[in-house]
Image (cartoon, rainbow, N blue to C red; front, side, top):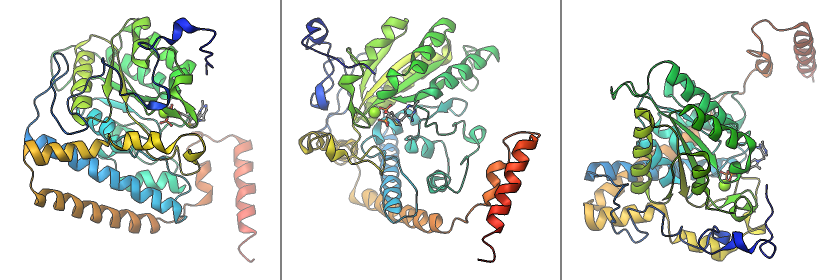
Length: 388
Ligand SMILES: Cc1ncc(C[n+]2csc(CCOP(=O)(O)OP(=O)(O)O)c2C)c(N)n1
Ligand SMILES: [Mg+2]
């Protein structure tokens, strides 16, 4: 992590390059935006797309349902039913837009916060909750959904993503011209992760091998209590230029723009044009995790500033005013969200406790003697409670 002393390095703090302190600016003139916070449609010469009414409704529905998933999971943690939860609140547009741009054969490497991407990839949300309840060691089969395991080691998954993308090149599934074959990979990471060596190495390898990988950075302005201003002297998307591939900042609270930019980046990667960095400029409305108290390091004025840029509100306005969605549509989505909430609460509480010895399974194909001894000692320890 870099600590910046503006008084010593005034040349690095020109207004046009320095990222906004504490997220109070609006992303700058380079940020791609197709839907303003007021729900007005904008157009962009490069990154634009045609959206049918049905498509906009589908994007809204997924955002609303994943917001409910997040709210329910947060409440379940508060009731002691989950050990921990990392909230996605405020980042629904970034994740849903990016996920809707995927094709089935593409592969995604998430962090620990990509619940909405998991949802679009067809992962059962109860499998996500089982991880945070601590009753499961994995959650889902990555190959069933082309969606990898959650990764808590900050930035590590960007290297896994580049390795997978290089594998796709070896398999000959890049640049064939067949839309059902050509494959791209998405590496999710955060603004804080951009300071990790792993992420720089991933950029270098992706560039060297022209790997079909889209680096998708959700700049939610904070890495726990560290603001993005401490991570970088230039806006994050500009880092791509130093590695020799394109970088774009998109309004991460605008689901249309996030979709359009990601779709273009993925298509370029599938065609063999190599890596791409997307900085989705967004905001973490909730806490870092349920163990965090953000009131200790950020102001309520900042949170209010971003609340006015709520990713769902602008789509609702656009749907009501321009696209055409009646009250019945919103009532149906709300009823579906209530049903989802009910299923999550009941399903979570009904999860059986795992066999404590399961933690020793699948560590080795042939467990060494020391592990077997540990397992036996652990079994004896548990058995000692049986008569208690
Ligand atoms: C290698 C490593 N170092 C430190 C941590 C502790 N840690 C967990 S989350 C986090 C901040 C990550 O911030 P960011 O990349 O912006 O992602 P966000 O949580 O905002 O989505 C840190 C430092 C970790 N999990 N892994
Ligand atoms: Mg962050």
